[in-house]
Length: 116
Image (cartoon, rainbow, N blue to C red; front, side, top):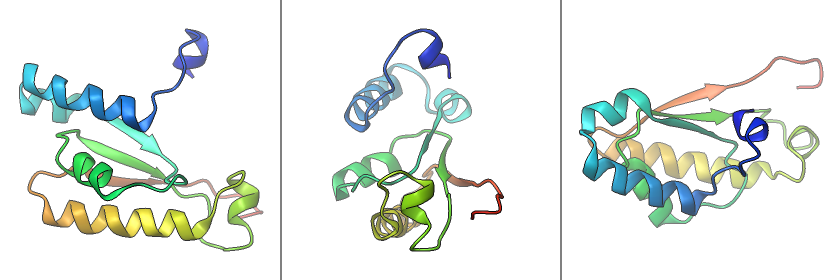
C-alpha cells in the first residue's frame, strides 16, 4: 500500500536480493532480523540460488500468502497462479530453511472466504 501511495514500484526478487546482502554487511545481523521481512505469494518459479539466498539473508521472517490448496480454485483466487509452482517453491523453501542456521521464520497468511 505504501508503494502505491508513494508511486514506487514493488520490489522484484532480484532487487530484493541486491538490497539484503549489502544491508547485512553494513547493519548488524541482529538489527536486521528484528526489522526486515517481506511477503510473497510464491507464484513465480524460484531458482535454487534464490531460495538459498533467502535462507541465508538474515531477514526476520517471510510471510507466505496461502490463498487455497485446492487445485481448481488456486488460479481463480491468485490470478494466473499455479498451485504446482506454489507447492514446489514452498517445499524448497521449507527444506532450505531447515538446513540453514538462523534462517528466517516462515509465516503463513490466509483469509477465510466462502470461495476458499
